[in-house]
Length: 226
Ligand code: NI
Image (cartoon, rainbow, N blue to C red; front, side, top):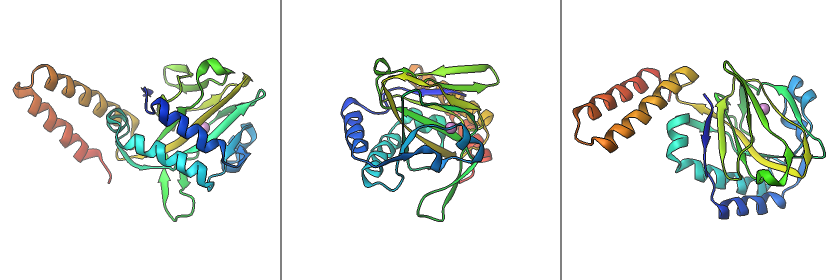
């Protein structure tokens, strides 16, 4: 399931993020790619250990922690520290699959990448191309969102970044290990959660509210790894 999280960052947070990564050291993005994806990749990335990039990453992690849509959709267990990429001058990233397991830098901790996330940091009118194209069972989806918006998609999906033919595209990308690793199960829980929220809003005293909520929690208990 593809889920758009609108306005993960407000204007001030976008500006703070951009200012911080503007001071970061940028290097060839092939450093964090696997063998296949490295051959397809052509971009710049902020150094993972750069303190300015880390500050921008922490700002995004803070916004994720208080975003109910993200939490309902991802059921996050671990979030990889956000990385930052920049594409300009016809740079692109051809079709690839993200690595299944990633080591969190400077720790012994590894996460399984259940979901991939991109937070757009450049307004779409400031560049041409640069669409994130994600293939799933229902065909391919082209995604180019306003600055501050995020797209979440199953990390099992083949995806690419189209060449940026004007301007520059700056974004943050990272992965999430979910408490519920299976995308179909996570999707069911998300849909059920959404229905429960609506039921509680429209009919707060209806007995179904508590019944459906207990089904939700018992499914989470059945499927979650924590
Ligand atoms: Ni990727």
